[in-house]
Length: 346
Image 1 (cartoon, rainbow, N blue to C red):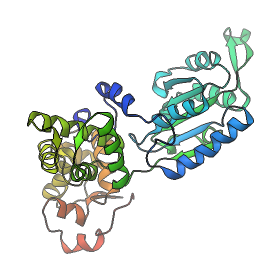
Image 2 (cartoon, rainbow, N blue to C red; image 1 turned 180 degrees about the horizontal axis):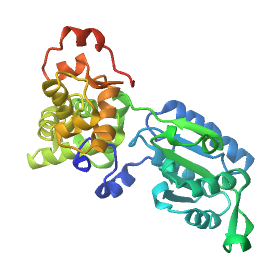
Image 3 (cartoon, rainbow, N blue to C red; image 1 turned 45 degrees about the horizontal axis):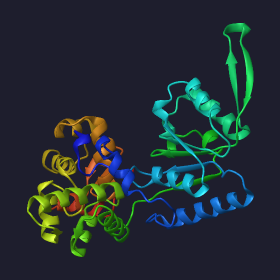
């Protein structure tokens, strides 16, 4: 199952407390995303000088890169309370109206997975963001009346992993939009070093680099791998994590040198060995690896495509030359010619 994967960027329920402990509390402590940090710092500093709430902010990007952390930092930097909810938690417009009407002046409303907000609630949000009011409908049918309810000035911080699903009217109402990118290995190594200090884990520099290289550019995955490597070294009776411990632990957990796990390799092996590299349809590929279509499409495929192991074409999924080589196979000449560059979405 996808939830059991060590390299999933989604947060697991048992990790909530640990994630909270490892999260930076200020922009100065936040690692990576330099351009976004600079932009947010200017935005917040200007808002403080005006003594007014900051503009509405939209944070987009893959899971595990720090969108929730940035929202918490925004509240800390503005010394404002924060209310946290998500799109799936709001089932109808009344839920959102109740939250909005209970906000206080300057409060930050963090709405995670905003792209999953129901359409009636979404339309209610337009007016709240722009005019700081909501229209409450009293009664039903011809006798129904609309009562405008004034809201305190608040800052909406929306987070989404799929910005393309947001309708234009909603995107346009955000004063600032930031996209979070995957981290480079140096930044991930910095994250691991910081987390090891907070968790009081003693780890060699070479081991930090080894874990960073398998973390898929995602801090959440890096912290999870660090904890598993710590467990392995502890069971082996070692107080200091060496590069040997890191390699042995990650090999045991089936996370290879580039961060691919069992499911990723199963997809590549199926493409190459069963379908001669493709093209093959997504549903057929999912059956071949024994997973749900959604799991292959949303969990394994993005990483494989982004790193050039697989390409999406109009005729189906195709293993690139790099994908062939990663599982120890020599690509056919036509594959090496057509797909020897990092793949892009088709």
